[in-house]
Length: 328
Image (cartoon, rainbow, N blue to C red):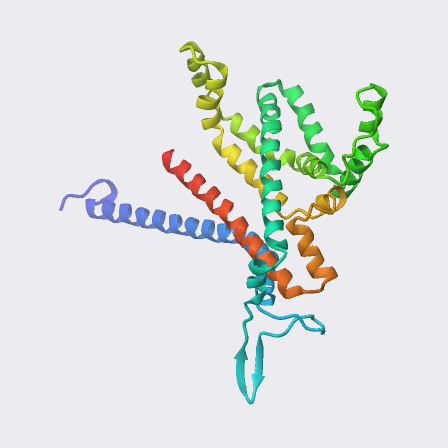
């Protein structure tokens, strides 16, 4: 067999090449293993957080919803009992049936009222937040920073303090009535506090930033050449807005709507402080059942039913996100 320089043969060269390839494969596998460990370490804390502060409380509430009220500590019956050495599991479904068979219809009305308030509040946030997000996306960087500060700065103050501020603004001798009466627009103070109007104002004010920020992120990705093309083809501004701009910002609209609708549906503080006696939303019902009536099983059933209602828009949101990714 012919030999090369310094006794290097083709067989030896092939062996060296195989060794290098094997070494590179081993290094690549080690890198993949290290990256896999790092990825698992990164996602471990979020999963642990969700397990401790969402899944476990949910399972506890779900378990309590199948109990019955008792004068004891805790104020509900155990699901598992032992009689003559035999284990018995008693599941009571009357808590769920009471929600739909209540003579006064309190729970169904509170659910419908909560959905109505959350839906209209989301719509108002969208109508108000879209122009604000558009202004943020199209203004200069210096102006954008100032506008961001104006939007986010109220969140630095306590949530309850801001609601109390609106109470002082909307009461009969508050700032709004004083200005309107000083201008001669009204002759007597308007009754705004303890009404549905006050509840809508409070929810829109508190949750508007959650609508603006996703819309701003979506508007920053808009292809403005499509809008220019629509104008060049003679499309009117309103038609251009709905046919060109809205489809491109659909993801931001859906995300912002979910961020507003979901917490607004179970809101308690705003209806309690700004709403009247007729503003019976599901959050207030939960508070009354848990702390006033001490009917924990029924309150747990009401909470589980509310989560089931919330699952509908959440599933719809994830399906919309999946379909948008498939189109891309």
